[in-house]
Amino acid sequence: MDDDMAGAIALHRWAVITEGANPKLSGAERGAVVRAIAAAAHTHPDGAERRYGRSTIDRWIRDYRAGGLAALRPRPRSDTGLVRARPELFSEAVALRLELPTRSAAQIAEILWARHRVAVSPRTLRDQLRRRGLHREALAAEPKVFGRYEAEAPNDRWITDAVVDPWVPFPRTSASVRARLFVVVDDHSRLLVHGRFHAVENARAAQEVLRTAIARRGLPAVLYTDQGAPFANHALARTCAVLGIRLVHSAPYSPEGRGKQERLNRYIRERFIAEACHAGIEDLAELNDRFEAWAESVANRRVHAETNQAPIARWEAGGPPRAADPARLREAFLWVAARRVSRTATVSLEANRYSVDAALVGRRVELRYDPADLSVIEVFCQGRPAGVATPFVIGRHSSARVPQAARPPAPVTGVDYLGLVAAAHDAEVVGTVSFAEAALLAAEGEDRP
Image 1 (cartoon, one colour):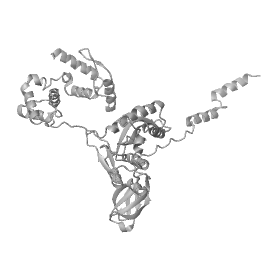
Image 2: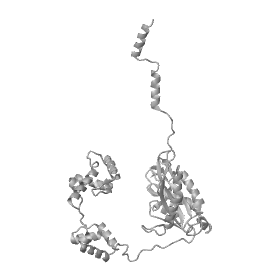
Image 3: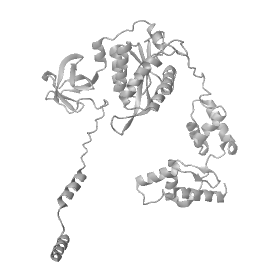
Image 4: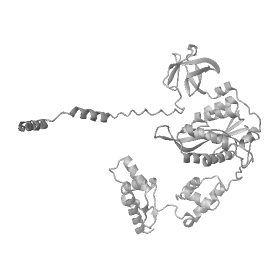
């Protein structure tokens, strides 16, 4: 690049950042200006229309403040033309990769710097090696093969996932929330076991969907999930342990076994969510009512392209499912917290205080409770029941981690305070006259015969 073009580019960059570089702007004001600059198109000295990201604009502002207009001139790259200018370096990089295929581009760049004191961008090395088919995946000793798997019978394996998609308004308010759909699908029959939209994506929402699925379709042998926070937690692990369900988490970057779930997610987006958004969604309750009807009458009764059977028919062919004992089912979905009993025979939980048996003072106990109802707390000591915790100070009736129902807005009273004040003022002055008006009326009276 010649000097004239470099100077023209520096001027162009200054023209782009002029408003954002104003030192009188506050941080919030500068952020708004930079966003506006990033959203606009700018004519480059080469005649092309270009857009620049916020990070680029912020970097140019920092450079200008540090070094003035000269700092906005294009900087020559230290690794420009690595393959042509320094073929021996690239040949060494190739040899280093072939010597140890798992060696990263960043590590190769560090080796080149240590040997030759030449800074080479790891990204450039990565791109050049990939163009020649020398990326680490291609050099792996045994390429990874994803086989096909299907459970042998209904309820042998369930797959669960969360889908984030439609915006749903809260009732009678202008606020909206991004709904999260938790679904459970049977691996063998492709049955949509159960699904429900929630306003939050947390462990409790996943547990509620699983509990309803078990109550409707029986117990699965295996529950297969990803590593997301709603599924990789102690609460779900305890639930599965109490019910005798094997909880399996898919390995990161290993999609095998999740293909059926992903296809179902896409099917739900295309066939249900798109139609629901087009028709208009009033609230979360209506969305869930429509989804349950669609799942039972459409999704589970269509003929599946791979099995050539309706999911509900294939699931029912497996016979009656293994039902869960109601008492054990309730126990499985309780949350557990360990506490040490204070000298006053009390324990704290979720910002509440409870009194327990005085014989437990100083001992470590286990509290089992329904997070949606903090008024009933069961106490266990060394695995054995030790009574219940009596509410002493209740400031919260449900766990903070449980989604709360939106508080309905206050009814509109129709009271216009300022209108009332104005009306009262008008009523007060009606029938009264000013001093000037009184004098005028008196003069008119004197003129009358």
